Image (cartoon, rainbow, N blue to C red; front, side, top):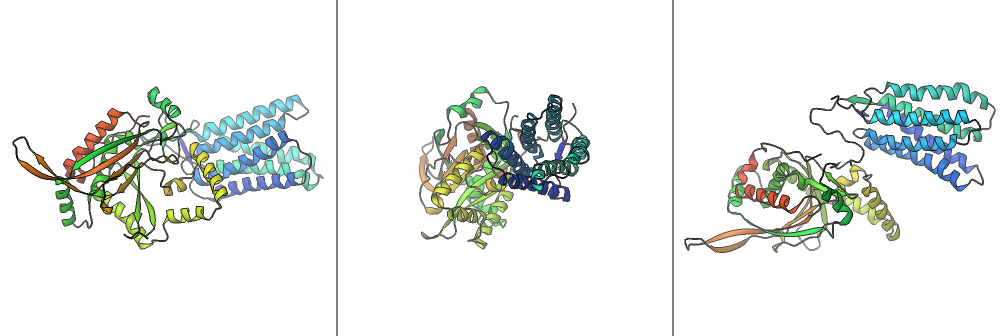
Length: 472
């Protein structure tokens, strides 16, 4: 079976910038034109003003932020633009002209979509599809309009700029063939995860019945015996890993568990189930200094399923060190500070808009990488505060499906079968999970595997023998 072609934009090249500028200028021309018009009907406003403006600006945003890996999304504003042209064509006096234009617009939308989604292995057809109508407008149709006032020319200029933008982006496209086993994103996927389409019906339907994370929570109390973990920590510190501790071991074990049980790395968004693949994003709240008055900040660290304990340690410590070196200049602090400047009512509206965008997977990846509400796991250490672990609720905003809290060490005297009394150390871990991502048996199996790693943490020094891929 022939592989699909993947089209992408290789950065902000001259054709890409030209395409974005043409779309912006097209929107400006239409706005200037409508400012000089009076008494326009509401349907006209919706179909001939708001619709093309939405298509223009959506195209620009997709081009600049998703062009490198999700260029196929640009088919959405192209379809919106074709609906605009089709509504305009319905007012033509000639039936034949109307039918031909409708067929042309349908061909443009279908051919562009088929190309950017990889069904057509060449983009050269788009050159003719956009270039020839552009030439026809300039040298045939527009010649009859010579002498018109500039105001009447603005809609035509807007249309020509749209064609120029589409021609420019078709010239800027590059293509590649995906590697064996590589997943190619498509419609329905998000920039932080791919949609799982082969789930059993109960998992596909449950997000519609249990609509929020907060009402879909399961609470789990776990106890981990840490004799081997402490020996492992001592060996790591002797090897030069300064401040290596239980947090690093727990994170490394969780990352390894995601390699074996990838369902742990799923999340719910827009009533759909998604998988993050191999990327595991862990959020953690840290105090910039151990004092009551010290402000909190959030760090987010991205791990890979193949990471060993040493790599987990290096990535986490590098992020923590960044916060310590620039305590007032973290990405999260800047984002929170920007939101804090917005008046309350407007902020409430903005958050509602962000929730809608997040529901449809339209939040910029730059925002979800900073957001503490988006990720694979939120972990918090109560041990550093000297208290037992808490049960922390999941956030309805965002998509974090698991919250882990672990507490201080405690000593327990236990009686063995032969009557011998031994003293052991434990830490308590409390998990709050979104029950909609996997079933109870899956969670139980993953927890047993996690315990096996914590009982013999030296397994975490080597990469996993196999990284299990989540289902499609």
